[in-house]
Picture 1 (cartoon, rainbow, N blue to C red):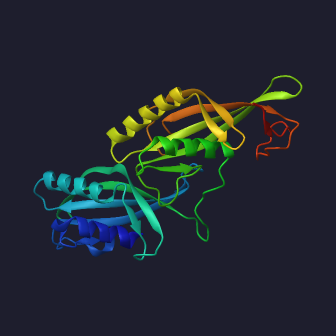
Picture 2: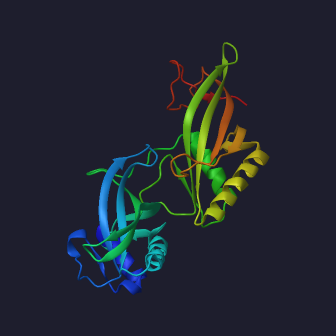
Picture 3: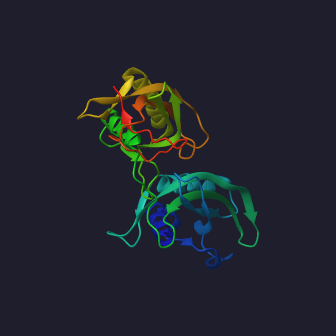
Length: 284
């Protein structure tokens, strides 16, 4: 990944003249401006985000003005944020870079005779010897994802459960966060599944606009198809819009899907067990 990020920066920032280094390669005599790429820690974030590796890009210029550093930082962000790169060229594994803000304040490095500022980026990675964390979607998550796809322009992607390593913007991720069963007598019960949606746009304006639009469409839809062959639906309850700090981790959309079920039937097995009862068949 380091090599692909380095190559991308060199290609997109002609003003550095190919000067994108590792930390041990620079000295006070290194021509400026230049970049230094560092790999930082890896950490396991929320299950739907997965294993994340952090990178730092330091922008260096001569002891003149931080305006040059500002310009470099803006171009570094544009070159990497939301960009899907491929390891080893065509046919290799793909990954997406995500800008996470500045890493440190302005710095004056007298040893290198340079001024600098740093930016942080994150990349989702597959665990050593593992695969992408995608799991089979719950039928209700799948139904919501399919309905969502019909509401979006063709360039939008819809993901289930987890962000893939090579996710793209614009996209929406749906995941199930809670399941509740409420008794409605000796046979029937009401099954509720809470969902969280993450909207990732190419720009903040696109992201906010699409999140608001999706809430409006969910309110208007009232229900979505669960099983077209048998004309079974789930009811949409209390769709809401939120403004989280990190849309990939917290999500902007919440709602509950609800149906009455007959706990005696085995027509529609699910993977969810609540209190020893398996909520299976859906009653119209």
